[in-house]
Structures are given as C-alpha cells and as structure tokens.
Image (cartoon, rainbow, N blue to C red):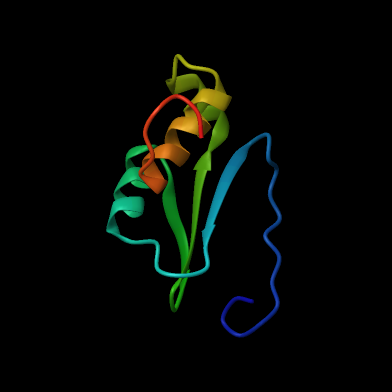
Length: 84
C-alpha cells in the first residue's frame, strides 16, 4: 500500500537496487544508504523508498556487487563481521 492505494514497484534488478522501509527507517539507516549511493525517491507517511543505480555503483566500487550489498546491509542493520 502506498498513499492508501495498492501499488507495485516495477524495476529492472540488473539496473537498480531498491530498498523499502515500511516503518521509520531511522537516521542511521538514512545516512548509511545515502553514503552508499542510494537516494530517497519517495516518502508516504512513515514508508520510504530508496533507489540506486546498480551499474554506476558497481563501476564505482572495486568489490563485487554481492560484497557491496552485504556491506550495505550490515551498515544499515548495524551488524559487524564478514557474514550475516
């Protein structure tokens, strides 16, 4: 549901990464996502949708995409170590 209506997010997963928060994301998550190249695309009350251009991020990073995704997730949820 978005703005009281049923909605779908349609995107090309080879071109973009999408993060949806269904409740308050918190300042830490917002800072980490922005630092990882995501931009907040839409806000509806407490929901937020963040998007980044996957191809630009891969080109900018020396690490493989799976590593970049894992590092981003660990930073958002505040976990440490090499695996979740």
